[in-house]
Amino acid sequence: MAPDGALGGCAVDREDPPGQGYGQGALAVASKFRVAPWSLDNQPTIGAQLRLPIHYQLTPAPPPKG
Image 1: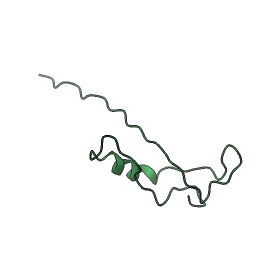
Image 2: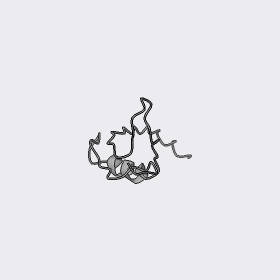
Image 3: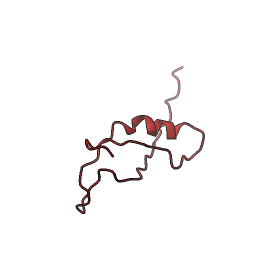
Image 4: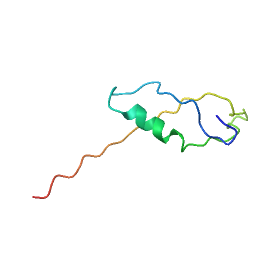
């Protein structure tokens, strides 16, 4: 993590289901995340590694009007 809390050097650890683009989607939004400089147990987070699970919840498209 950078001094401003930005995530850097991100990579996809796992994608389920694979090959659907969810991993690339998660990487695309990673630049929007910020992490506090200190963890809840008073450990520095700058330079730390973390695993950030992202879960997508898809809703079905409404049926076409017809």
